[in-house]
Image (cartoon, rainbow, N blue to C red; front, side, top):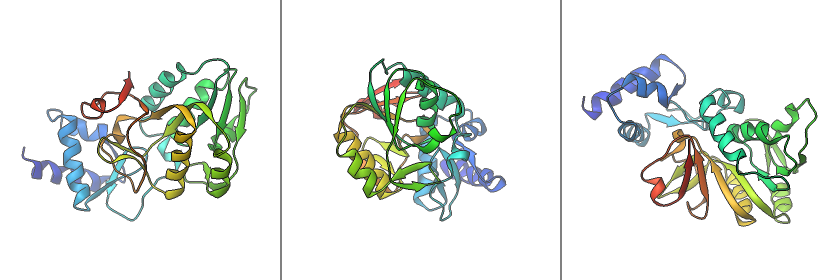
Length: 245
């Protein structure tokens, strides 16, 4: 099947449902490699036929750039759990960490809440906690964004510029060896940039659907960080350390 035929079939699949996961497209084309399908999707995206949404879903092109975290939590849940468990193994008693917003970061939060550590965060999913926990949690101030359950903006940035972290765990919307780490908004990109500058070790929690995905605003180059993912990627692993399971 030539690329044009595959792309037309992908568009037909998207017309039947509002959102499609990359894994579902892979099931439709079992003999086609993941990298080839991603190239097809990039070509469709380049021609304004489809768009990647945060969380790894794919839909027909529209003006929507981000979907609510409640929906993202349901996408790639098994992958996010694997990534969270891998990341939790890097966190030790006494650590002072920053935990970003995002569905994979929320999954990590649930894994580490009973460790004796200090967590600085802008992730408002902490308000879903109903039980006692061991960690000391410090929620930074800022403007609340209900779409991604996060706080950001000038107040958040002022807070972050006065804090230093041993380890930081960041959510991302896109990771590419050429274009770096990207996110939908300027305030989220700025926040991640400040955290990176104030951290000894930076980890990107990134399921494989984000590989070679490009969002609106660049946060920083893909260097001096470690990616934690559900699978490897030949191109990205050439330029950065990538931990996967």
